[in-house]
Length: 289
Image (cartoon, rainbow, N blue to C red; front, top):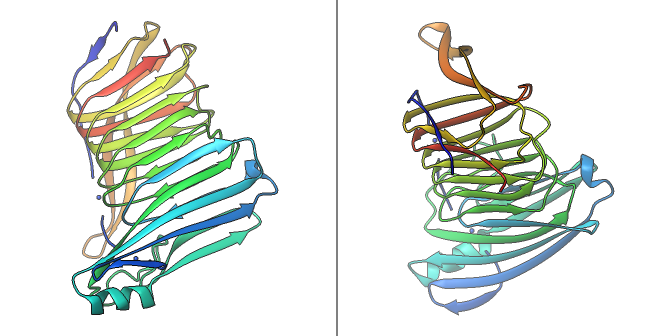
């Protein structure tokens, strides 16, 4: 691959936790397989949100009108008593509205963002949830996991939000606006068409490798502390650095303004904004071969 080099810049950072129901395997482990289906009236305006804590999420687009969820649950405990407590307490939540389907752990804690029920008490068991999901091609996604899992999305053309903490993110044949963030792991995405609006890609520790069609036109902003940016696109132009002002609240100092500096490059004719950031890792912006 023909490579162009751009010097190093800057970086940033964040989370963790633990669930089950079905057939006892032994005194310290309990397994179940759950299958749920939801009919979707209008996939292009509906979001599927999955908020997991431990385990992988694999989403595949298909030419249907249902969201099909298959969930493998395994609850682990040190003693039979702890295992029985987990079997009694654990509950998944499934909420469907006109514009959304939300899947989350409802008990003994709530995994939905902003619920604030993480530290009510000590929990002596843990549960791993492995999701295999089929969605209509045009579905919008908001999928998140934290520990011992990867996020994989294939053939989904809607807006994509994928958040991980201790694992990678892989997206294949994307078309929509994307927000991909992880802390420890790579971000790898290939697009069938350039995303229509501002998209962002972030990892603290890992590489970011994004492949676009060869007619890419965008203004790219990038920051990396211990890494570099490489590309095989030739029609590029260096732009002045961008200074972004972020408002932050501080109890002791009131309102503060944090200034972030990002390098900028115009690909093709420019236009939509694509944001890249790593702390420890390289950034690759590649043409489809």
